[in-house]
Length: 201
Image (tube, rainbow, N blue to C red; front, side, top):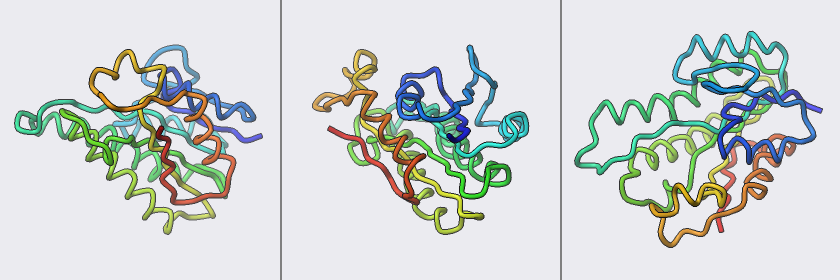
């Protein structure tokens, strides 16, 4: 049994990840709500405080990254930076700071999303930062210290979230949360490293 910090545990993607982490002690974290720890991944001090509060842990699974949606010609720098600081730098900082605290041989699992390979309107910032995270994981795996591993789950839309996102994604086939949960399980419990784990129909 591993001690796993699950960030974004109350969201639909967090609940999907939770399905794949049933064999472990899961410590939940998020920006608000009924979680074990409050954390804001856009704030370095908040990230460090989370790790110090938890103590010893073997894995970090992140399922959050806020994105702004707008037409490219209308998107402001503020909107771009909001997405970059959450979905990209927030996740990078989880790893950059977390590698100091995680156990030897520990693992990080980040989240990207299918829109960097199957784009839709208004999602340029989401697609760009998802692509950045996929690249970050593939490259930083070569530099992780103390036998630490890192992977990223790149899922399509969840069936459980289709009522929210389906109208934006014509022609996409949603996947069940349980299938996405298996991707998180593979990352945490397997031996793969530097992999983009696609979950698509």
